[in-house]
Amino acid sequence: MSVEHVKRDIPDATVARLPGYLRALGEFSSKDIRSVSSEELATAAGVSSAKLRKDLSHLGSYGVRGVGYDVTHLAYQISRALGLTHDWPVVIVGMGNLGRALASYGGFATKGFKVVALLDRDPRVVGGRADNLIIQPMTALEALVTPGEACIGVIATPADSAQEVADRLVDAGVSSILNFAAAHVQVPEHVLTRKVDLSTELQILAFHEQQRAGTLPDELLEGA
Image 1 (cartoon, rainbow, N blue to C red):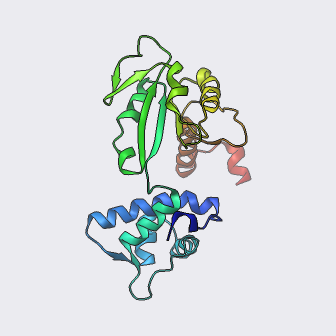
Image 2 (image 1 turned 180 degrees about the vertical axis):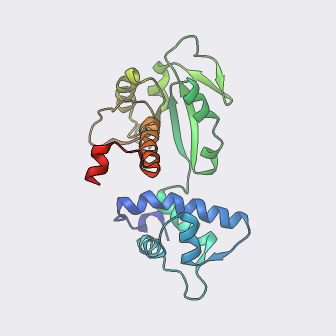
Image 3 (image 1 turned 90 degrees about the vertical axis):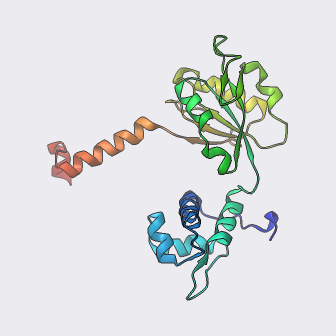
């Protein structure tokens, strides 16, 4: 089946779970397991088997009764649905500790992403190397993005620079942005953004740890 025939009405919640299924399938494949039941895959992905089957039905994959899902074929179906059957170019802006860590992350290449450029506005950083790529100045951004071709921009700068970087990425033609900066950025409606806020995630974990330990403030316990 060609890419053009991939169903496009997949719910956002399902899309958010597909990478988890793909990761679990990769683990099964590494163990030379060729087929899995919905229960086995659901357990590995941390969801219910009913939810798994409903999610996969959006891909047209129902498995085979008594056999389960073919690991290789299902991984391909999910990869195709996620658009991972070809490499997506990625530009990382901000070569501080986080940016360098992202640049060195080996998982990009195996998951369908290729870091094509690293940028920073600090002249003391420009010209250096990170993961075998030369760090370029922000003025080089426009030349790195091919008009009409999808490119993902990653913001790994301090919060006070995030909006300026987002504006530059949008002006250069980038239509998908992953924002690691501790700040919300405003972008046009046609630009997709995802925010990764580590401090927020830690705060949520802290709340649940406090709840589990029974040390919530009295006013919250009274309303529970």
